Image 1 (tube, rainbow, N blue to C red):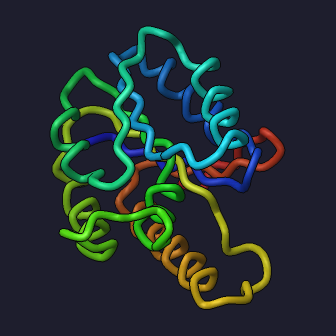
Image 2 (cartoon, one colour; image 1 turned 135 degrees about the horizontal axis):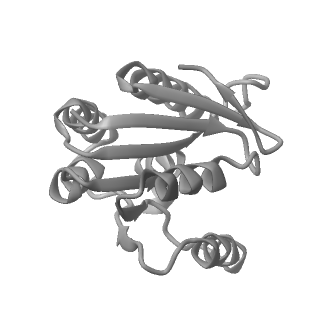
Length: 175
C-alpha cells in the first residue's frame, strides 16, 4: 500500500511548494503528475512558475482525465508520485467547456481513483484545494464543484496516512 499524503489548502497557500518539499525529502525517484490543461496565457504563466520551481530531474506526466490508470502505470516501490492537483482534475471532468472524454464520467473516474489508491506501491503525495470554507456559491455548476471537491477531499483524506492543511505557507498537521 502506498504511503499517501494529502496536502490541502486555499489558493496561493503554499500547498504545491510544500508537496514538492515532501517529494524531495523522500529521497525517491519522483514523477510529477500534472492534471492541468492550458486554457489561457495567465494560466500558462502559473504553470510555468510551477515548472521553474521543480527539480529538472523529475519525470513529468501530464494527465488531465484518467488519473487512476496513470497512477497504476507509474507507481512503484522506490518511487514518489506527486499529483498536482485534484482540484483541476475534478474541474476538467465536470466543466462542459473543458471537453471531458465522452467515453467516461467524473463518477466513474473518481471511483476508479479511490479504488486504486489503496493498491498502489511506493509513496504518493496529492495536492488539493479546500474550497468549502466560504459561502455556498451561486450557480448550479459552482455548487456542484464545491460539493464534489469536498467529497473528494474527504475520501482521499480517509485513505491517507498523512494529511496537512496549508495557510499562509504554514503547515497544520491534520493526520
